[in-house]
Image (cartoon, rainbow, N blue to C red; front, side, top):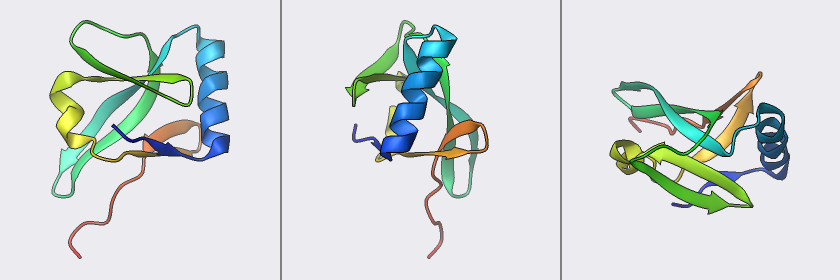
Amino acid sequence: MDIVMSHQVRDEIKETLLKSGKTAARFVLKEYGYCGALFNVEMSDPREGDFITEVNDITFVVDSKFVFALKYPEIEKVGDQFCVKRTVCGG
């Protein structure tokens, strides 16, 4: 899985992981609609059945049943949350 993020977002995820005491950034399904899946990124630990990958010294996890919906995730920070940038839908 190719995960895209700015250097600033990468550094903020690393800092948030350190502060939280968690070992991974988890893609969490927020909603699923006409334009597809929308994910947030939360600090977590790996669980049984997770797909696990490492990018820029950050461990990312997602429930294996959602891997298909994360083709080329681009992580951005909106307010105090990390989320996967929504792709344009419909045209």
